[in-house]
Length: 326
Image 1 (cartoon, one colour):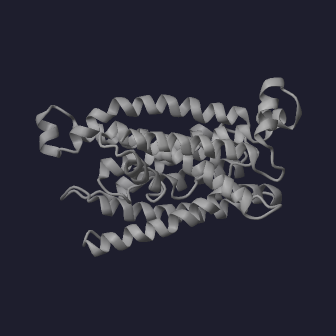
Image 2: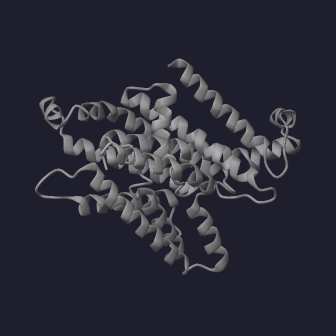
Image 3: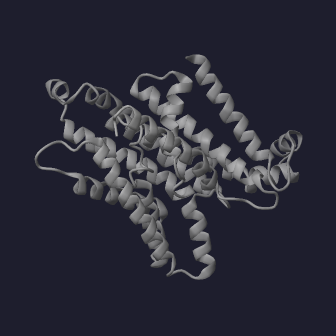
């Protein structure tokens, strides 16, 4: 549905504009326009330093998480199979906190990627059975347990940090876009663009995998290799978002189904793009709501995504149990 894509684009545009205008000090459209044209005044300061980097970073992080979630959900054919539910984002977050606690001084993207990939490998190893293929629900449940474990270990790692740094790490682990800069915005968009192109090339393989193992083998596709490549791409996309915004809960879970419902996307590529756009909108709107909820207090964006995502997860579980799928 073209109208669905147009609606999604309008929502993203309005969310970005609201994110630029609303805050502890509201900046009207006229001030923003004046600042963009002249480079002077509160509008220019907002665009150059304060809110624009935050909004652009949020759009990129949301898009990365949304695409990662859609790839996993299509690959495992289960709406619960998202990187945040399966523990991948928690593993990426643990790796970042551990690196900070140990004072390694490493760049966050490769650290988060290593943590996410290690978690995915651990989930696969603990779920593997020599007798039969591992059901997706088993992977999800094992990943859920590992995610909780990673969260607990992250809390323990924060005890190694000074009080001020521990408080900031806790805020980051919740998921926050506070104090983001243009370097982080360029980082998330640059890496996500490359991984998005890699994922787009893999969508044909994903479409073949959806036909079943026998059909995929008949068409000459090495199913195991293709599946691992898709998982790795999804984990790297999720880690890219985590590196700049923290493990924002439930964004990857919600973005795919909502994007497909709004746009009517059917092909794997269209569903992935719709999920990326929806994830971008969710993160920016969640950050806006978190900033505007309590005057004088800026809550982490992860608080809002958690409040939105928890009822959605419960609804998915209830629907799955009613259908006998769980």
